[in-house]
Length: 544
Image 1 (cartoon, rainbow, N blue to C red):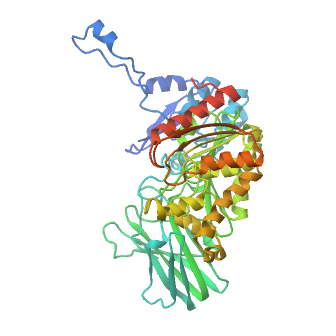
Image 2 (cartoon, one colour):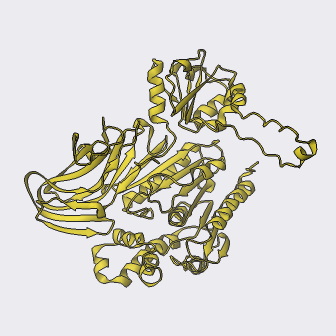
Image 3 (cartoon, rainbow, N blue to C red):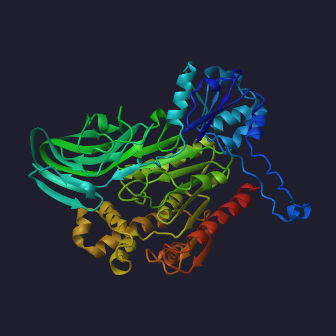
C-alpha cells in the first residue's frame, strides 16, 4: 500500500476511487502534525489480569507508525512552518508537487529550505483526477522491483533461422555479428524469454549496441498476452533515431510479455549487448524520482541519484557494488545519515563494470560529482566517497582524483587484473563477471599479448591514477578480508604505493578473517561506524 498526502483548503480525497494499491490522506494547512499523530499506532491495551509489576518488567518498545512515509504529496496551499517541520522525514526529495501559486507564498527561511531540499515541483495541472494520476504514475515507491527492472544479456540471444553471417558470443559483453544483411531490414536474432509487463507501469527499453558505418539497425518489440507466449498481439518498431534515448512501449497489456528482435540491413559488423527493461517515471527520472543517467558515445551507461538531505556538509557519495538487479544500493543507509548524498549504480555486464570506461564516460562521473558540490556550495574538502566490494573501486578511483575528505570502503578491490586471474587459479566459477570486466576494459592488442598483459594492464588502470593523486588531506578508512579470494593485495599494495610516492594520508584499517563474501555484517557495521564517527568529528553532525 502506497500512501499519498494532500495539503490544501479542501479535502478532495473522498472523490478518489478506493483501491488496494493507493491510499490518500488529507490535512488542512496547520494540521499536518495532528494527522501524523492520528496515523500513529494506538497504545496496546493492558490484558485482563496483567499486573503492574508484569507491565514494568516488559521492555519499552517505541511504537512505529503504520504510515512511515508518503510516496508523494501535493500542496494545493502552502503548509505552515510547523507542518513542514513535522513532515520533513515523511516525504523524500522529488516526491512533493504543488500548485504554481504556492511558490509565491514560500517566504519563511524554513519553507525556502524545505522547498529546495525536497526539490518541490510546481504542476500546471488544474484538474484533481489529473493531479492524482500524475503523482501515482511517477512517484511510486519501488525502483523496479516487480518482474521488470531486469536486463537480457547476450547469452539469451538466439540468431534468426535465416541468418547466414558470422556469429561470436563475447561473454556477457556482447554478441558479435558480421554479414551482408541485405538491402531491406531482416531479422538477425531475438532475445529469448521476454520480459513481464507489470500492472500499472509503463515499460521502457534501453538496448546496448554498436555497428559499422555500413549497417542500419532497428528494434522490433512484440507483445504476447498472459499465458499465451506464441500469440503476438502488438508490434512496435523503433529506429536508431528513436533509440538515442530509452524507448517507451505505450499501451502494453499488463501481465503479458515483451519480446525484442533486432533487424538490420547493409553490410558490416554489428555488436549487441544487454537489453534493459525498466519502469518509466516519465519526466521524473530513473529508478527513483530524481534519478539520472550518464551515457557515452558507445551507449555505455551509469546511473546516479542525488538527494539534497538537509543541505549541510558533507556530500556523501556511494558507489553501488555488484548488482544483477537494476537500480541503486544503500539508499536507506545513506539517507539515515541526514546529509546530502549521491548514489551511483553501474548496470553494465552481468552486475557491474566497476565504473571504468572511456575518457568521456569517466569525465562525466567526475563532472556529476563536481556539479553536485557546486549546487550545494561545497568544495572537495566536504566530499566523502564510499562503497563496498565492487563499489570500492569507484570510491577509491574517483575519490582519489577529486581529493575527497574521506574515502570509506569495505572489502576493497583495486587490482581488477588479479580479480580476473583468481577466477582460474583460486575460485573457479565464483565471480565470472571479473573476466567480462577484463574483456570490456582491455584492447584487442593487450588481449592478443596474453593473460599476463591483461592482468598487468587492468591492475595499472587503478594504480596509475592512485599514484598521481594528492592524498595528504584525505582520510582513508577501510576494512578488508585477510584471505580475500577476489583481491588479497589491495590493502598491502596501497601501503606500498603510499610509501613509494611519499603520500601521508590519515589511514585507519581493520582486517577480518575470511574470504571476500564472508563477514558481511561485520563489514557493514564497521563501515557505518566510520561514517558516523567522521561526520561527528569533522562536521559536527551527531546522530541522535
